[in-house]
Image (cartoon, rainbow, N blue to C red):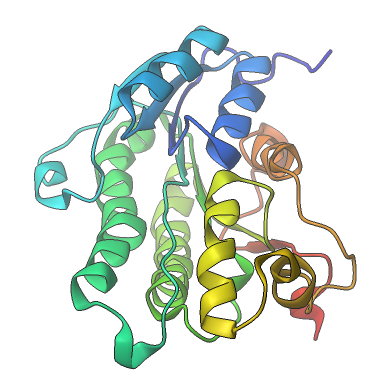
Length: 250
């Protein structure tokens, strides 16, 4: 059984009702933390929170104006919520581009801004940003996602520099394609823009750059998030941890 090394801590996980977020919620709860599951889907957030004895927060994080005056009393913040849209730049809908940047860059900034004062007051905090191999590398047809994740990398580093004197760390986790609903929903779009059958997308597109030819599992990402939240990771900050099967080694 995992040590209860996060007992007494409060963790907020965005996009916590499924995929990586749900796995992180289970990881933190298993280590003793009280977990707030933030998600747009009310039923899913409630169900995910009930599984771990946590609490749901039903919120549209793309409505960033509503977050301007938010305050958060949490010890651990996991910025995970995200979506994906795939299209060539000349065909990329401008409103969709703005949506992805609001959800995956603006809202993490506003949540960090809301959480830091209480973290500073306690002299302890963990900001964990679920980035991507696409935070370090680019792929065609993903202009908004790549731009948002690259921006998140910079935001995470600035948070690390400002938070260090207050006992707050900030890091990114950079997985390759993870076996989640988000990735599954990409398959049809990827097939369309690349002109290949859907059943060839995983092998020919998603795994082409990795040395380890499989998808990442959500609980693998969560295990790293759990370590980054622990006291043993107190000297780890401003870093980007790849879990990409060797993708970014190229």
